[in-house]
Image (cartoon, rainbow, N blue to C red):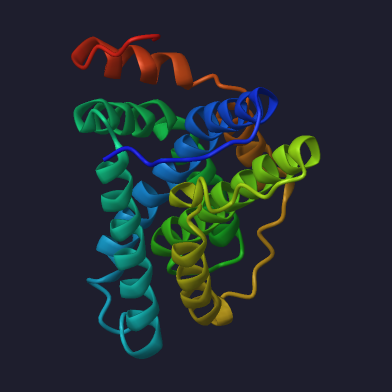
Length: 222
């Protein structure tokens, strides 16, 4: 069922529509990519019984459950669930190469530092960074809308803020990375991240995603 929202003027409606568009075409891409990378990392981590236990296991599972709940909630708000599913699949496909390059850059830094679990930890760290990115993008959009309207629209668009999953996954990462001790804030990693960030925020992926979803699930106005 679509979510009911209220506004007090045509100007506020304009601000809300603009905010919704930015969230749809930017934040949702980052969040979808983040969840997909987190699911992949978790699948690999679950085979490592030496690591996947105690607080790590609890935090990882809670992050997964939070992400799944959020996806389910989003689907209940969609007028056309098929559109959302096709859109999400295409987001993952379009971003896959840049996400992979970012993850490889992380792995290369870990390899350079002599860390023997670089493959697994590169997936884990890539997921953490993407989750943080999606949350920061959401918060930035809401902050900009508040400058224009004087109102905080966090609750209106809360389904697109992956804060809980981000917190739980981040807490798990803090435990696992205690044994790493390698600085990942390097030119190589930053360059790969910047390329991904630019495409997520400047809409380079979006048209292909909309075309794919709209072809299978035609919607008015697209």
